[in-house]
Image (cartoon, rainbow, N blue to C red; front, side, top):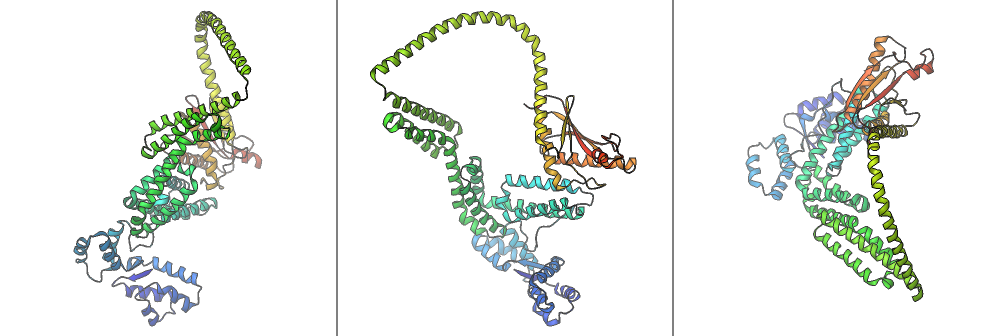
Length: 559
Protein backbone atom coordinates (compact mmCIF):
# COMPACT_ATOMS: atom_id res chain seq x y z
CA UNK A 1 0.00 0.00 0.00
CA UNK A 2 1.32 3.45 -0.92
CA UNK A 3 -0.44 6.52 0.53
CA UNK A 4 0.52 9.57 -1.55
CA UNK A 5 0.16 13.12 -0.22
CA UNK A 6 -1.55 15.34 -2.76
CA UNK A 7 0.19 18.46 -4.03
CA UNK A 8 -0.21 21.47 -1.74
CA UNK A 9 -1.38 19.40 1.25
CA UNK A 10 1.95 18.63 2.94
CA UNK A 11 2.18 21.84 4.98
CA UNK A 12 -1.26 21.31 6.50
CA UNK A 13 -0.61 17.60 7.21
CA UNK A 14 2.81 18.37 8.71
CA UNK A 15 1.21 20.78 11.16
CA UNK A 16 -1.41 18.22 12.22
CA UNK A 17 1.28 15.58 12.79
CA UNK A 18 3.33 17.93 15.00
CA UNK A 19 0.21 18.77 17.01
CA UNK A 20 -0.66 15.12 17.63
CA UNK A 21 2.89 13.71 18.05
CA UNK A 22 5.07 16.43 19.58
CA UNK A 23 8.18 14.22 19.81
CA UNK A 24 8.66 14.14 16.02
CA UNK A 25 11.45 16.37 14.65
CA UNK A 26 11.77 17.83 11.15
CA UNK A 27 13.99 14.95 9.94
CA UNK A 28 11.34 12.43 10.99
CA UNK A 29 8.69 14.36 9.09
CA UNK A 30 10.84 14.75 5.98
CA UNK A 31 11.27 10.96 5.77
CA UNK A 32 7.52 10.34 5.52
CA UNK A 33 6.78 13.18 3.09
CA UNK A 34 6.82 10.83 0.07
CA UNK A 35 4.75 8.06 1.65
CA UNK A 36 2.49 8.69 4.62
CA UNK A 37 2.35 4.94 5.45
CA UNK A 38 5.82 5.27 7.06
CA UNK A 39 4.17 7.28 9.83
CA UNK A 40 2.99 4.13 11.65
CA UNK A 41 6.57 2.89 11.96
CA UNK A 42 7.72 6.29 13.19
CA UNK A 43 5.03 6.32 15.89
CA UNK A 44 6.07 2.86 17.04
CA UNK A 45 9.79 3.78 17.09
CA UNK A 46 9.64 7.25 18.67
CA UNK A 47 6.93 6.52 21.28
CA UNK A 48 7.79 2.87 21.98
CA UNK A 49 4.24 1.68 21.18
CA UNK A 50 3.36 -1.84 20.13
CA UNK A 51 2.76 -2.39 16.42
CA UNK A 52 -1.03 -2.72 16.75
CA UNK A 53 -1.40 0.47 18.83
CA UNK A 54 0.82 2.43 16.44
CA UNK A 55 -1.16 1.25 13.39
CA UNK A 56 -4.48 2.07 15.07
CA UNK A 57 -3.33 5.64 15.82
CA UNK A 58 -2.06 5.99 12.25
CA UNK A 59 -5.31 4.71 10.70
CA UNK A 60 -7.40 7.06 12.85
CA UNK A 61 -5.20 9.97 11.76
CA UNK A 62 -5.38 8.98 8.08
CA UNK A 63 -9.20 8.94 8.19
CA UNK A 64 -9.13 12.56 9.35
CA UNK A 65 -7.21 13.74 6.25
CA UNK A 66 -8.82 11.72 3.46
CA UNK A 67 -9.21 14.79 1.24
CA UNK A 68 -5.43 15.36 1.21
CA UNK A 69 -4.14 11.91 0.25
CA UNK A 70 -4.56 9.31 -2.48
CA UNK A 71 -4.17 5.58 -1.71
CA UNK A 72 -3.40 3.02 -4.40
CA UNK A 73 -2.10 -0.55 -4.31
CA UNK A 74 0.35 0.14 -7.16
CA UNK A 75 1.43 3.16 -9.11
CA UNK A 76 -1.65 4.66 -10.74
CA UNK A 77 0.36 5.43 -13.86
CA UNK A 78 1.40 1.78 -14.11
CA UNK A 79 -2.29 0.76 -13.83
CA UNK A 80 -3.28 3.10 -16.64
CA UNK A 81 -0.42 1.92 -18.88
CA UNK A 82 -1.32 -1.72 -18.23
CA UNK A 83 -4.98 -1.04 -18.95
CA UNK A 84 -4.03 0.50 -22.30
CA UNK A 85 -2.34 -2.78 -23.29
CA UNK A 86 -5.24 -4.91 -22.03
CA UNK A 87 -8.15 -2.99 -23.53
CA UNK A 88 -6.71 -1.34 -26.68
CA UNK A 89 -8.06 2.01 -25.54
CA UNK A 90 -4.76 3.85 -25.99
CA UNK A 91 -6.08 6.70 -28.10
CA UNK A 92 -9.02 7.42 -25.81
CA UNK A 93 -6.81 7.32 -22.71
CA UNK A 94 -4.07 9.52 -24.23
CA UNK A 95 -6.58 12.15 -25.25
CA UNK A 96 -7.79 12.24 -21.65
CA UNK A 97 -4.40 12.14 -19.92
CA UNK A 98 -3.02 14.91 -22.18
CA UNK A 99 -5.46 17.24 -20.45
CA UNK A 100 -4.00 16.50 -17.00
CA UNK A 101 -0.93 18.06 -15.44
CA UNK A 102 1.90 15.76 -14.41
CA UNK A 103 1.30 16.42 -10.70
CA UNK A 104 -2.50 16.00 -10.69
CA UNK A 105 -2.66 12.76 -8.69
CA UNK A 106 -6.36 13.11 -7.97
CA UNK A 107 -7.35 13.25 -11.67
CA UNK A 108 -5.08 10.31 -12.46
CA UNK A 109 -6.75 8.24 -9.75
CA UNK A 110 -10.16 9.08 -11.24
CA UNK A 111 -9.16 7.90 -14.75
CA UNK A 112 -7.77 4.61 -13.43
CA UNK A 113 -11.01 4.13 -11.53
CA UNK A 114 -13.30 4.73 -14.50
CA UNK A 115 -11.37 2.48 -16.84
CA UNK A 116 -10.77 -0.41 -14.41
CA UNK A 117 -14.19 -0.87 -12.82
CA UNK A 118 -16.28 2.28 -13.13
CA UNK A 119 -17.15 2.07 -9.45
CA UNK A 120 -14.07 1.77 -7.24
CA UNK A 121 -12.42 5.04 -6.22
CA UNK A 122 -8.65 4.74 -5.90
CA UNK A 123 -8.72 7.63 -3.44
CA UNK A 124 -11.13 5.98 -0.97
CA UNK A 125 -10.52 4.30 2.37
CA UNK A 126 -13.65 2.17 2.48
CA UNK A 127 -17.31 2.82 1.63
CA UNK A 128 -18.97 6.14 2.32
CA UNK A 129 -21.09 5.70 5.45
CA UNK A 130 -24.29 7.76 5.52
CA UNK A 131 -25.36 7.98 9.16
CA UNK A 132 -29.03 7.63 10.16
CA UNK A 133 -30.95 10.40 11.84
CA UNK A 134 -31.16 10.17 15.64
CA UNK A 135 -34.90 9.59 15.27
CA UNK A 136 -34.39 6.34 13.31
CA UNK A 137 -35.54 3.12 14.98
CA UNK A 138 -32.54 0.76 15.47
CA UNK A 139 -34.71 -2.36 15.63
CA UNK A 140 -36.42 -1.60 12.32
CA UNK A 141 -33.16 -0.71 10.59
CA UNK A 142 -31.41 -3.89 11.81
CA UNK A 143 -34.32 -5.95 10.56
CA UNK A 144 -34.32 -4.13 7.22
CA UNK A 145 -30.58 -4.71 6.71
CA UNK A 146 -30.99 -8.38 7.61
CA UNK A 147 -33.75 -8.70 5.00
CA UNK A 148 -31.67 -6.94 2.33
CA UNK A 149 -28.70 -9.25 2.98
CA UNK A 150 -30.99 -12.24 2.45
CA UNK A 151 -32.15 -10.74 -0.85
CA UNK A 152 -28.52 -10.16 -1.81
CA UNK A 153 -27.77 -13.87 -1.35
CA UNK A 154 -30.67 -14.69 -3.68
CA UNK A 155 -29.08 -12.31 -6.21
CA UNK A 156 -25.70 -14.08 -5.78
CA UNK A 157 -24.05 -10.97 -4.32
CA UNK A 158 -22.37 -13.13 -1.64
CA UNK A 159 -20.24 -14.84 -4.31
CA UNK A 160 -19.94 -11.94 -6.76
CA UNK A 161 -18.61 -9.47 -4.17
CA UNK A 162 -17.53 -11.70 -1.25
CA UNK A 163 -15.18 -9.30 0.52
CA UNK A 164 -17.65 -6.44 0.83
CA UNK A 165 -20.57 -8.79 1.48
CA UNK A 166 -18.72 -10.36 4.43
CA UNK A 167 -17.99 -6.89 5.81
CA UNK A 168 -21.72 -6.11 5.59
CA UNK A 169 -22.52 -9.34 7.49
CA UNK A 170 -19.92 -8.46 10.11
CA UNK A 171 -21.51 -5.05 10.66
CA UNK A 172 -24.96 -6.66 10.94
CA UNK A 173 -23.69 -9.06 13.62
CA UNK A 174 -22.24 -6.12 15.56
CA UNK A 175 -25.53 -4.22 15.26
CA UNK A 176 -27.49 -7.22 16.60
CA UNK A 177 -25.08 -7.53 19.52
CA UNK A 178 -25.54 -3.85 20.28
CA UNK A 179 -29.30 -4.35 20.35
CA UNK A 180 -29.03 -7.37 22.65
CA UNK A 181 -26.66 -5.53 24.97
CA UNK A 182 -28.93 -2.47 24.94
CA UNK A 183 -26.15 -0.13 23.84
CA UNK A 184 -26.82 3.44 22.72
CA UNK A 185 -29.10 3.68 19.70
CA UNK A 186 -26.53 5.88 17.95
CA UNK A 187 -23.90 3.09 18.09
CA UNK A 188 -26.34 0.50 16.74
CA UNK A 189 -27.43 2.84 13.93
CA UNK A 190 -23.80 3.53 13.00
CA UNK A 191 -23.12 -0.21 12.69
CA UNK A 192 -26.24 -0.59 10.53
CA UNK A 193 -25.16 2.37 8.39
CA UNK A 194 -21.71 0.82 7.98
CA UNK A 195 -23.26 -2.51 6.99
CA UNK A 196 -25.56 -0.74 4.56
CA UNK A 197 -22.54 1.04 3.01
CA UNK A 198 -20.68 -2.24 2.53
CA UNK A 199 -23.79 -3.87 1.09
CA UNK A 200 -24.24 -1.02 -1.39
CA UNK A 201 -20.61 -1.43 -2.42
CA UNK A 202 -21.09 -5.19 -2.72
CA UNK A 203 -24.11 -4.63 -4.98
CA UNK A 204 -22.07 -2.30 -7.17
CA UNK A 205 -19.20 -4.79 -7.41
CA UNK A 206 -21.62 -7.61 -8.20
CA UNK A 207 -22.80 -5.56 -11.17
CA UNK A 208 -19.17 -5.13 -12.24
CA UNK A 209 -18.68 -8.89 -11.91
CA UNK A 210 -21.79 -9.56 -13.97
CA UNK A 211 -20.50 -7.24 -16.66
CA UNK A 212 -17.25 -9.19 -16.88
CA UNK A 213 -18.38 -12.78 -16.18
CA UNK A 214 -22.11 -12.69 -16.91
CA UNK A 215 -22.00 -16.12 -18.56
CA UNK A 216 -20.57 -17.57 -15.33
CA UNK A 217 -23.32 -15.96 -13.23
CA UNK A 218 -26.04 -17.35 -15.52
CA UNK A 219 -24.46 -20.81 -15.45
CA UNK A 220 -24.31 -20.78 -11.64
CA UNK A 221 -27.97 -19.76 -11.35
CA UNK A 222 -28.92 -22.59 -13.73
CA UNK A 223 -26.96 -25.08 -11.60
CA UNK A 224 -28.75 -23.89 -8.46
CA UNK A 225 -32.17 -24.15 -10.11
CA UNK A 226 -31.33 -27.69 -11.26
CA UNK A 227 -30.68 -28.70 -7.64
CA UNK A 228 -26.87 -28.87 -7.64
CA UNK A 229 -26.64 -27.61 -4.06
CA UNK A 230 -28.63 -30.63 -2.89
CA UNK A 231 -27.25 -33.28 -5.26
CA UNK A 232 -23.58 -32.28 -5.38
CA UNK A 233 -22.98 -30.02 -2.38
CA UNK A 234 -19.20 -30.59 -2.18
CA UNK A 235 -18.61 -29.92 -5.89
CA UNK A 236 -20.84 -26.82 -5.75
CA UNK A 237 -19.00 -25.49 -2.72
CA UNK A 238 -15.60 -26.06 -4.39
CA UNK A 239 -16.68 -24.26 -7.57
CA UNK A 240 -18.13 -21.40 -5.53
CA UNK A 241 -14.79 -21.01 -3.74
CA UNK A 242 -13.03 -20.78 -7.10
CA UNK A 243 -15.56 -18.16 -8.22
CA UNK A 244 -15.08 -16.12 -5.05
CA UNK A 245 -11.30 -16.19 -5.57
CA UNK A 246 -11.91 -14.51 -8.94
CA UNK A 247 -14.57 -12.04 -7.79
CA UNK A 248 -12.44 -11.05 -4.80
CA UNK A 249 -9.80 -9.98 -7.30
CA UNK A 250 -12.41 -8.01 -9.24
CA UNK A 251 -13.06 -6.14 -5.99
CA UNK A 252 -9.35 -5.29 -6.02
CA UNK A 253 -9.42 -4.11 -9.67
CA UNK A 254 -7.69 -7.27 -10.98
CA UNK A 255 -9.89 -8.02 -13.98
CA UNK A 256 -7.34 -10.15 -15.82
CA UNK A 257 -7.99 -13.25 -13.67
CA UNK A 258 -11.73 -12.93 -14.25
CA UNK A 259 -11.26 -13.08 -18.01
CA UNK A 260 -8.74 -15.93 -17.76
CA UNK A 261 -10.94 -18.15 -15.58
CA UNK A 262 -14.45 -17.33 -16.86
CA UNK A 263 -14.56 -20.24 -19.35
CA UNK A 264 -13.36 -22.73 -16.75
CA UNK A 265 -15.89 -21.53 -14.18
CA UNK A 266 -18.75 -21.51 -16.68
CA UNK A 267 -17.92 -25.09 -17.72
CA UNK A 268 -17.86 -26.25 -14.09
CA UNK A 269 -21.31 -24.79 -13.34
CA UNK A 270 -22.79 -26.10 -16.62
CA UNK A 271 -21.47 -29.57 -15.81
CA UNK A 272 -23.07 -29.39 -12.35
CA UNK A 273 -26.36 -28.32 -13.94
CA UNK A 274 -26.23 -31.24 -16.40
CA UNK A 275 -25.44 -33.78 -13.68
CA UNK A 276 -28.28 -32.41 -11.52
CA UNK A 277 -30.81 -32.62 -14.37
CA UNK A 278 -29.78 -36.23 -14.97
CA UNK A 279 -30.07 -36.98 -11.27
CA UNK A 280 -33.59 -35.54 -11.23
CA UNK A 281 -34.79 -37.47 -14.27
CA UNK A 282 -32.82 -40.73 -14.12
CA UNK A 283 -32.12 -41.53 -10.46
CA UNK A 284 -35.42 -43.29 -9.69
CA UNK A 285 -35.41 -45.61 -12.70
CA UNK A 286 -31.68 -46.27 -12.22
CA UNK A 287 -32.28 -47.39 -8.62
CA UNK A 288 -35.11 -49.74 -9.70
CA UNK A 289 -32.94 -51.30 -12.44
CA UNK A 290 -30.12 -51.78 -9.93
CA UNK A 291 -32.53 -53.54 -7.58
CA UNK A 292 -33.81 -55.77 -10.42
CA UNK A 293 -30.24 -56.78 -11.29
CA UNK A 294 -29.60 -57.68 -7.65
CA UNK A 295 -32.70 -59.93 -7.76
CA UNK A 296 -31.45 -61.75 -10.88
CA UNK A 297 -32.76 -59.74 -13.87
CA UNK A 298 -29.78 -60.77 -16.02
CA UNK A 299 -30.81 -64.45 -15.75
CA UNK A 300 -34.59 -64.23 -15.39
CA UNK A 301 -35.55 -61.17 -17.51
CA UNK A 302 -32.66 -60.31 -19.88
CA UNK A 303 -34.89 -58.84 -22.63
CA UNK A 304 -36.82 -56.61 -20.22
CA UNK A 305 -33.50 -55.54 -18.71
CA UNK A 306 -32.14 -54.59 -22.14
CA UNK A 307 -35.28 -52.55 -22.88
CA UNK A 308 -35.07 -50.67 -19.56
CA UNK A 309 -31.34 -49.99 -19.94
CA UNK A 310 -31.75 -48.83 -23.54
CA UNK A 311 -34.48 -46.40 -22.45
CA UNK A 312 -32.14 -45.01 -19.77
CA UNK A 313 -29.29 -44.59 -22.25
CA UNK A 314 -31.51 -42.86 -24.79
CA UNK A 315 -32.77 -40.41 -22.16
CA UNK A 316 -29.22 -39.75 -20.95
CA UNK A 317 -28.18 -38.88 -24.52
CA UNK A 318 -31.31 -36.73 -24.97
CA UNK A 319 -30.46 -34.73 -21.83
CA UNK A 320 -26.95 -34.08 -23.15
CA UNK A 321 -28.46 -32.41 -26.22
CA UNK A 322 -31.71 -30.95 -24.79
CA UNK A 323 -31.21 -30.34 -21.10
CA UNK A 324 -33.74 -27.48 -20.94
CA UNK A 325 -36.66 -29.22 -22.68
CA UNK A 326 -38.43 -29.82 -19.37
CA UNK A 327 -41.71 -31.11 -20.80
CA UNK A 328 -40.05 -33.78 -22.95
CA UNK A 329 -37.73 -34.78 -20.10
CA UNK A 330 -40.71 -35.38 -17.80
CA UNK A 331 -42.32 -37.64 -20.44
CA UNK A 332 -39.13 -39.62 -20.94
CA UNK A 333 -38.54 -39.90 -17.19
CA UNK A 334 -42.03 -41.33 -16.70
CA UNK A 335 -41.43 -43.87 -19.50
CA UNK A 336 -38.13 -44.89 -17.92
CA UNK A 337 -39.82 -45.47 -14.57
CA UNK A 338 -42.57 -47.60 -16.15
CA UNK A 339 -40.03 -49.77 -17.98
CA UNK A 340 -37.88 -50.13 -14.87
CA UNK A 341 -40.88 -51.10 -12.75
CA UNK A 342 -41.99 -53.57 -15.43
CA UNK A 343 -38.49 -55.08 -15.39
CA UNK A 344 -38.61 -55.60 -11.63
CA UNK A 345 -42.08 -57.13 -11.84
CA UNK A 346 -41.08 -59.54 -14.64
CA UNK A 347 -37.89 -60.49 -12.84
CA UNK A 348 -39.76 -61.46 -9.70
CA UNK A 349 -42.50 -63.28 -11.62
CA UNK A 350 -40.03 -65.25 -13.78
CA UNK A 351 -37.94 -66.08 -10.75
CA UNK A 352 -41.02 -67.48 -8.99
CA UNK A 353 -42.31 -69.44 -12.03
CA UNK A 354 -38.96 -71.12 -12.53
CA UNK A 355 -39.54 -73.04 -9.29
CA UNK A 356 -43.06 -74.15 -10.34
CA UNK A 357 -43.96 -77.58 -11.92
CA UNK A 358 -46.24 -78.00 -14.97
CA UNK A 359 -49.10 -79.20 -12.73
CA UNK A 360 -48.64 -76.16 -10.46
CA UNK A 361 -48.79 -73.88 -13.49
CA UNK A 362 -52.03 -75.53 -14.68
CA UNK A 363 -53.58 -75.23 -11.23
CA UNK A 364 -52.51 -71.57 -11.03
CA UNK A 365 -54.09 -70.91 -14.44
CA UNK A 366 -57.34 -72.61 -13.36
CA UNK A 367 -57.33 -70.57 -10.17
CA UNK A 368 -56.92 -67.34 -12.12
CA UNK A 369 -59.76 -68.35 -14.48
CA UNK A 370 -62.04 -69.03 -11.50
CA UNK A 371 -61.15 -65.65 -10.07
CA UNK A 372 -62.08 -63.98 -13.37
CA UNK A 373 -65.44 -65.80 -13.46
CA UNK A 374 -66.12 -64.83 -9.87
CA UNK A 375 -65.30 -61.20 -10.61
CA UNK A 376 -67.66 -61.21 -13.61
CA UNK A 377 -70.50 -62.47 -11.38
CA UNK A 378 -69.69 -59.84 -8.80
CA UNK A 379 -69.70 -57.20 -11.51
CA UNK A 380 -73.18 -58.23 -12.67
CA UNK A 381 -74.47 -58.12 -9.12
CA UNK A 382 -72.77 -54.79 -8.60
CA UNK A 383 -74.53 -53.36 -11.64
CA UNK A 384 -77.92 -54.25 -10.12
CA UNK A 385 -76.90 -52.69 -6.86
CA UNK A 386 -75.70 -49.61 -8.72
CA UNK A 387 -79.12 -49.10 -10.31
CA UNK A 388 -80.76 -49.31 -6.91
CA UNK A 389 -78.22 -46.90 -5.44
CA UNK A 390 -78.93 -44.38 -8.17
CA UNK A 391 -82.56 -44.32 -7.11
CA UNK A 392 -81.58 -43.90 -3.47
CA UNK A 393 -79.11 -41.19 -4.44
CA UNK A 394 -81.85 -39.15 -6.05
CA UNK A 395 -83.77 -39.26 -2.77
CA UNK A 396 -80.70 -38.20 -0.82
CA UNK A 397 -79.83 -35.17 -2.94
CA UNK A 398 -82.37 -32.95 -1.23
CA UNK A 399 -81.05 -34.01 2.16
CA UNK A 400 -77.48 -33.36 1.03
CA UNK A 401 -78.39 -29.86 -0.10
CA UNK A 402 -79.87 -29.13 3.31
CA UNK A 403 -76.72 -30.31 5.02
CA UNK A 404 -74.37 -28.45 2.67
CA UNK A 405 -74.47 -25.13 4.50
CA UNK A 406 -74.01 -26.87 7.84
CA UNK A 407 -71.01 -28.78 6.50
CA UNK A 408 -69.40 -25.60 5.22
CA UNK A 409 -69.68 -24.02 8.64
CA UNK A 410 -68.32 -27.17 10.25
CA UNK A 411 -65.39 -27.27 7.80
CA UNK A 412 -64.63 -23.63 8.57
CA UNK A 413 -64.67 -24.35 12.32
CA UNK A 414 -62.47 -27.39 11.86
CA UNK A 415 -60.00 -25.41 9.78
CA UNK A 416 -59.87 -22.69 12.42
CA UNK A 417 -59.36 -25.26 15.18
CA UNK A 418 -56.55 -26.92 13.24
CA UNK A 419 -54.87 -23.57 12.67
CA UNK A 420 -55.36 -22.75 16.35
CA UNK A 421 -53.64 -25.98 17.43
CA UNK A 422 -50.82 -25.40 14.93
CA UNK A 423 -50.38 -21.88 16.29
CA UNK A 424 -50.21 -23.17 19.87
CA UNK A 425 -47.56 -25.72 18.89
CA UNK A 426 -45.33 -22.93 17.50
CA UNK A 427 -44.60 -21.52 20.97
CA UNK A 428 -43.19 -22.83 24.23
CA UNK A 429 -44.98 -21.85 27.47
CA UNK A 430 -42.27 -19.29 28.21
CA UNK A 431 -42.65 -17.67 24.77
CA UNK A 432 -46.38 -17.15 24.34
CA UNK A 433 -49.91 -18.25 25.26
CA UNK A 434 -52.49 -18.75 22.48
CA UNK A 435 -56.24 -18.31 23.08
CA UNK A 436 -59.41 -18.46 20.99
CA UNK A 437 -61.77 -15.50 21.21
CA UNK A 438 -64.77 -16.53 19.09
CA UNK A 439 -63.47 -16.46 15.50
CA UNK A 440 -60.37 -14.55 16.56
CA UNK A 441 -57.00 -15.73 17.85
CA UNK A 442 -55.03 -13.98 20.60
CA UNK A 443 -51.28 -14.53 21.11
CA UNK A 444 -50.01 -13.27 24.48
CA UNK A 445 -46.26 -12.68 24.14
CA UNK A 446 -44.85 -13.82 27.49
CA UNK A 447 -41.28 -14.00 26.15
CA UNK A 448 -41.22 -10.40 24.88
CA UNK A 449 -39.48 -8.28 27.51
CA UNK A 450 -38.75 -4.61 26.91
CA UNK A 451 -36.07 -2.69 28.82
CA UNK A 452 -37.53 -0.79 31.75
CA UNK A 453 -39.56 2.25 30.62
CA UNK A 454 -38.44 1.74 26.98
CA UNK A 455 -40.09 0.57 23.76
CA UNK A 456 -37.01 -0.72 21.92
CA UNK A 457 -37.00 -4.33 20.66
CA UNK A 458 -33.88 -6.43 21.20
CA UNK A 459 -32.26 -8.72 18.64
CA UNK A 460 -33.13 -11.69 20.89
CA UNK A 461 -36.85 -10.85 20.38
CA UNK A 462 -36.71 -11.46 16.60
CA UNK A 463 -37.08 -15.30 16.67
CA UNK A 464 -40.28 -15.04 18.76
CA UNK A 465 -41.72 -12.28 16.56
CA UNK A 466 -40.83 -14.30 13.44
CA UNK A 467 -42.97 -17.18 14.80
CA UNK A 468 -45.88 -14.79 15.37
CA UNK A 469 -45.50 -13.45 11.81
CA UNK A 470 -45.64 -17.01 10.45
CA UNK A 471 -48.92 -17.64 12.34
CA UNK A 472 -50.36 -14.38 10.92
CA UNK A 473 -49.42 -15.47 7.41
CA UNK A 474 -50.92 -18.95 7.92
CA UNK A 475 -54.29 -17.38 8.81
CA UNK A 476 -54.52 -15.89 5.33
CA UNK A 477 -56.94 -13.01 4.83
CA UNK A 478 -57.08 -11.47 8.30
CA UNK A 479 -56.56 -8.21 10.16
CA UNK A 480 -54.21 -7.80 13.11
CA UNK A 481 -54.34 -5.65 16.22
CA UNK A 482 -51.25 -5.27 18.42
CA UNK A 483 -52.23 -4.30 22.00
CA UNK A 484 -49.76 -2.88 24.53
CA UNK A 485 -50.46 -3.09 28.29
CA UNK A 486 -48.59 -1.87 31.40
CA UNK A 487 -48.84 -2.14 35.16
CA UNK A 488 -50.09 0.79 37.29
CA UNK A 489 -46.67 2.06 38.32
CA UNK A 490 -46.39 5.67 37.08
CA UNK A 491 -48.94 8.09 35.74
CA UNK A 492 -51.83 7.25 33.41
CA UNK A 493 -50.57 9.31 30.44
CA UNK A 494 -47.01 7.94 30.72
CA UNK A 495 -48.28 4.36 30.82
CA UNK A 496 -50.62 4.89 27.89
CA UNK A 497 -47.74 6.35 25.82
CA UNK A 498 -45.35 3.54 26.83
CA UNK A 499 -47.88 0.81 25.99
CA UNK A 500 -48.70 2.54 22.68
CA UNK A 501 -44.98 2.86 21.76
CA UNK A 502 -44.33 -0.82 22.53
CA UNK A 503 -47.29 -1.97 20.48
CA UNK A 504 -46.14 0.32 17.63
CA UNK A 505 -42.59 -1.19 17.78
CA UNK A 506 -44.01 -4.71 17.34
CA UNK A 507 -46.31 -3.53 14.54
CA UNK A 508 -43.41 -1.89 12.68
CA UNK A 509 -41.40 -5.10 12.96
CA UNK A 510 -44.23 -7.07 11.30
CA UNK A 511 -44.56 -4.50 8.50
CA UNK A 512 -40.82 -4.34 7.80
CA UNK A 513 -40.60 -8.15 7.54
CA UNK A 514 -43.76 -8.72 5.50
CA UNK A 515 -41.88 -8.56 2.19
CA UNK A 516 -44.22 -8.02 -0.73
CA UNK A 517 -47.33 -8.83 1.33
CA UNK A 518 -49.63 -6.07 2.53
CA UNK A 519 -50.66 -6.31 6.19
CA UNK A 520 -53.93 -4.97 7.58
CA UNK A 521 -52.49 -4.11 11.00
CA UNK A 522 -52.87 -1.46 13.65
CA UNK A 523 -51.53 -0.93 17.18
CA UNK A 524 -53.12 0.46 20.33
CA UNK A 525 -51.89 1.09 23.86
CA UNK A 526 -54.25 0.59 26.83
CA UNK A 527 -51.84 1.55 29.61
CA UNK A 528 -53.07 -0.14 32.79
CA UNK A 529 -56.78 -0.08 31.84
CA UNK A 530 -57.04 -3.87 31.23
CA UNK A 531 -55.13 -5.67 34.00
CA UNK A 532 -55.04 -9.48 34.17
CA UNK A 533 -54.13 -9.55 37.86
CA UNK A 534 -53.84 -7.23 40.84
CA UNK A 535 -51.26 -4.45 40.56
CA UNK A 536 -50.60 -4.67 44.32
CA UNK A 537 -48.07 -7.52 43.96
CA UNK A 538 -44.89 -7.82 41.87
CA UNK A 539 -46.19 -11.04 40.27
CA UNK A 540 -49.46 -9.40 39.36
CA UNK A 541 -47.73 -6.38 37.84
CA UNK A 542 -45.46 -8.69 35.80
CA UNK A 543 -48.56 -10.38 34.32
CA UNK A 544 -50.08 -7.01 33.47
CA UNK A 545 -46.97 -5.83 31.52
CA UNK A 546 -47.60 -7.54 28.19
CA UNK A 547 -48.14 -7.30 24.44
CA UNK A 548 -51.10 -9.16 22.91
CA UNK A 549 -51.48 -9.84 19.18
CA UNK A 550 -55.12 -10.28 18.03
CA UNK A 551 -55.69 -12.01 14.66
CA UNK A 552 -59.21 -11.30 13.34
CA UNK A 553 -60.13 -13.84 10.66
CA UNK A 554 -62.23 -12.87 7.62
CA UNK A 555 -62.05 -16.16 5.72
CA UNK A 556 -61.26 -19.70 6.87
CA UNK A 557 -57.60 -20.27 7.77
CA UNK A 558 -55.37 -22.33 5.47
CA UNK A 559 -55.94 -26.08 5.69
